[in-house]
View 1 (tube, helix red, strand yellow):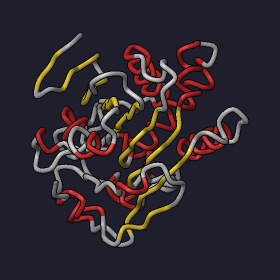
View 2 (cartoon, one colour):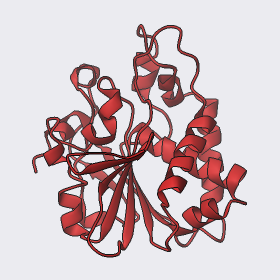
View 3 (cartoon, helix red, strand yellow):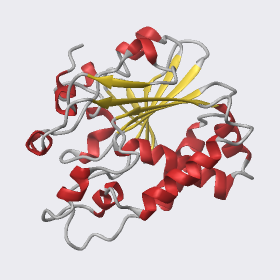
Length: 261
């Protein structure tokens, strides 16, 4: 299925091509959005855009200025924080398998080019689930092997690796999605995911090639701020994209929606 709008191409149900460079690409970026309080269907681009303008979607604009030979993708999945009471518990394995399949269809990681994941919030946990699902259930698949072998970086924006106090609070609000439960501080599923992901990162075939960067806030984000935002967006620290360190941003997450291009 291919649908093109505003120079963005939908490759399949869960994957969009944000940028195709001229000539042969030299790197593949995969963006993964996080939990959404509204407009969940368009989170694959609104997360990375200012004031809902596709023309200000920084993976299409600023990123490709820095990396003109980059092929840029964005994964899409149902990340709505608000669901009807009848919604069942989401299957994280099924989500990982579904997004992994979409990446295989698009040929991501199949041409001996570095693959870099750029993840916001819950999207970082989704990236981990893709890796864990791929390694434990599909590593005999040559395409999955190629993808894992070509990963070079994980860029985490405000990913709650150990859970979130806000999730503990919001889970008690009406109509909250079961996805919110995955972000609680006391969470066996999240603990297992982190443990399995960490084991994979320490394997000989990956430990020297996978790099990690985490960006997080230094100020506490107020609950009121979060509940009034359409989505949380992130300010990219361009000079440190593949450096293994932990950047502390001197602000809270709510101000990231004001990133000016």
